[in-house]
Length: 292
Image (cartoon, rainbow, N blue to C red; front, side):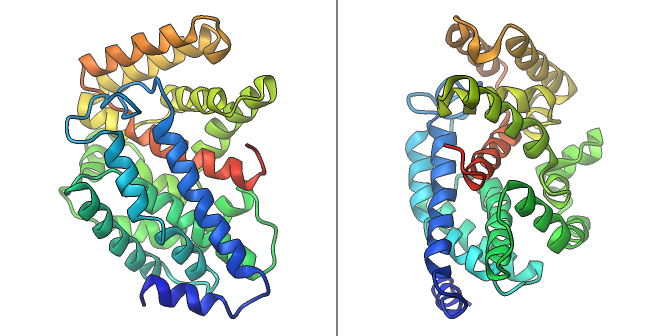
């Protein structure tokens, strides 16, 4: 079924449901734009910097988001029908093709297609059942509805994928296990860091920066492992932990410290892409909870 057909079928459910689906789609895109537009991210693409990536820039991400605008409402609508995982995967595969066409074959948002696709579908399921929709309920829904299927699908994934190679080499969980468990890192690390700084400053950009460094400091980031091995992961975690210990974004010199960390990541070609994906999840969950 095409994205248009999926969305059309959902319009027959409940009054106002189609409007809610479109709104959630916009929130997903906004969360991903906020993630890439956030400056001073160590080793990551942002406006004016490629970070540690020679094959992509900020414009690549914007083109990718344009190509994904219809995907998030469609997968949210699909979730209204309580689908099995293959139905969601089919939409994700089609979205990935459009992403690659828009970026010339560069993977800018594969993680977001997976993570926010699942959370969108969970949101649709909860909306159609007239259940509470917030960060905790959406994450719980992903784990309960599709967690077992995600893990079963993981066992059949290509043996040469970066995520599986890293998992087998270092025993890390990876993105699929994080999703299957209901995004515990986003709920327990990213979202509390975001909430705390937002409450202290009222500044969503500062809150997002703090959440990113909190995630880098604690997550077993598969991208850091892929690019730098255990030493790269330890280095990235230590840099982020030291940044937080010095006051994080509440320190008067936090921007200078973040710039120095970025330079150190780039010099080592390190990129905490897994943490960046989880920041996108965190920002979407913050939207579900009504935070700016």
